Every structure is written in structure tokens, then in C-alpha cells.
Image (cartoon, rainbow, N blue to C red; front, side, top):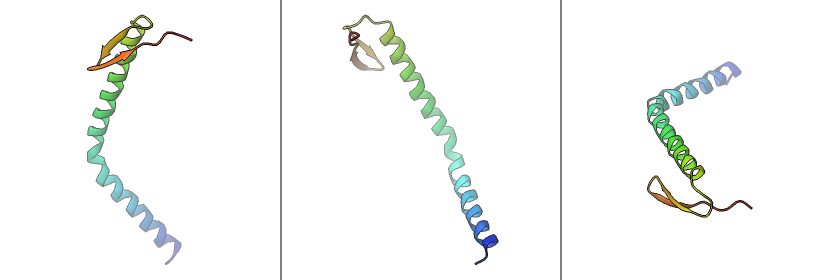
Length: 68
């Protein structure tokens, strides 16, 4: 097999992988944005909470630890 033919097959496999995964990209972006917003909400709630106090964010209970 020549180098040109091998490179062509590699490129073909890469292009097929892109065509296969491209429809999944919007769902991945939505999930990523939701996780980012949830994390931002937890951080903002924690920062607004006094040290040693329990708080709830996103349906989960946390306790902010006092600084060392």
C-alpha cells in the first residue's frame, strides 16, 4: 500500500467519525452548559453562606467549611 493510499484511508476514517459524531454535538453542548450553570449556582450559594453553615444547592445539601 502506498503512502498516499494509506493517508487517504486515514482521512476517510476521520471524516466518517466526524459525520457520525456531529449530530451528537448539540446534546453535548446542552449538557455541558447545564453542568456549568449548576456548578456556578453552587459556588454562588456557597460564597453567600457563612462558614460552618449547611446550605442546599441543586437539591443537594452541603456544608461550608471554615477557612484554615
